[in-house]
Length: 304
Image 1 (spheres, helix red, strand yellow):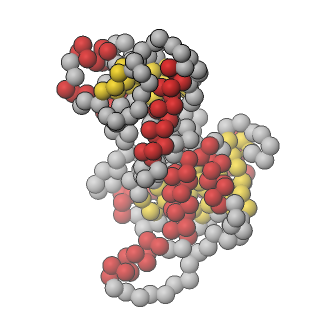
Image 2 (tube, helix red, strand yellow; image 1 turned 30 degrees about the vertical axis):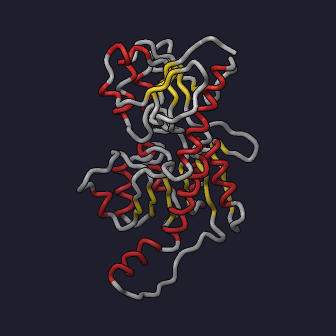
Image 3 (tube, helix red, strand yellow; image 1 turned 60 degrees about the horizontal axis):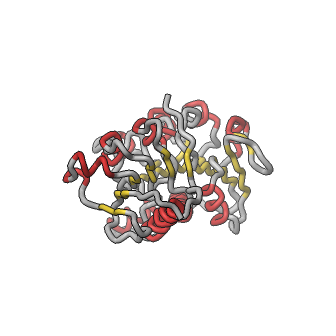
């Protein structure tokens, strides 16, 4: 065991911590400079966005930032030498995959249109699309991508996998253009990096199969919003978005009124499965420190 004590800030005042560790969940805005300087292990509040990250520079003795998100692109700007960053890989795999599947089926089976008809009290039969016999591309084949494939594996479909680095049965993202004309559904699950920002833009939308569906449960900026709007307005493709750029999507933004898009407000990971899984991860990380074991989900970061 280690004698290294930790002062932890997280959103759960009842979190189980090792003996000798100190926990606070008091609102950060109520803490004095002295209290902020005591914090060595910081768990930014889930779904609090950049507001939670802005406290990092105010914690001079902070050593560890444990995110509750799988994505970490927005945290890099707040880091400094001596800080170690960890993400929540594994926590959101099933919840995000469930939403990707729900969005896919909802769009293909015209569920948004039927909801509108129900509100209007209108019974209007139409023939819908189907997932059967489609080609589905999973763009981003990490833990969420693999979980999503497991969910859809029993459908009678053709699955193509894409990742930054090619490996067995996984194509490099750099080669996706030549497959786009045959793909019916594109599911984006990549992290936001310099190489994935605006990954899907006019060039790729122009290559996509007419009527194809693109689903984004990654980060909003993986898609060029202006180019997406152009493709939607031309009736070339359809979209289902859990994330947008900008986000939150402001009132009056043209995406809201596009008939070919389904939008949900970044709820991929925020389900009933989140709290117990996130607590388990943070508890395990603290126990690893206590037992002098390596923590998991370490992020190699570089600020440019």
